[in-house]
Amino acid sequence: MKTYSMTCRCGDVMKVEAESRNEAVAKLKARMTLDEVKRHMDEKHPGEPLSSQEQIAMEIEKGVVEV
Image (cartoon, rainbow, N blue to C red; front, side):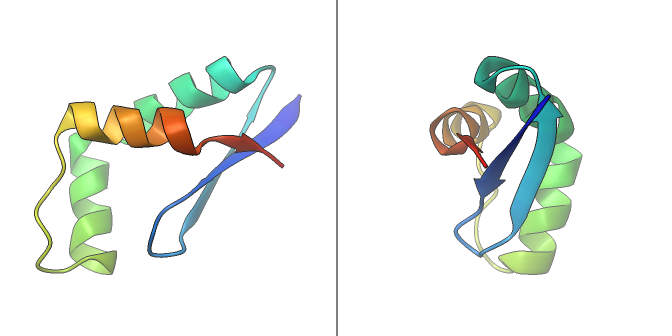
């Protein structure tokens, strides 16, 4: 397994273990439910609007890198 990560613009890093980048993207998409995104936004980005599920998916797809 390889380690993949994604860094939010606030500096938070999310890591997953996966066989491929595609698997890592899928795992992060599954982890970042609307409730989880809302919790993160409330804690790290207070006052900012909540992104749509499509925007979140696009950010994950662009941001995942192997570490």
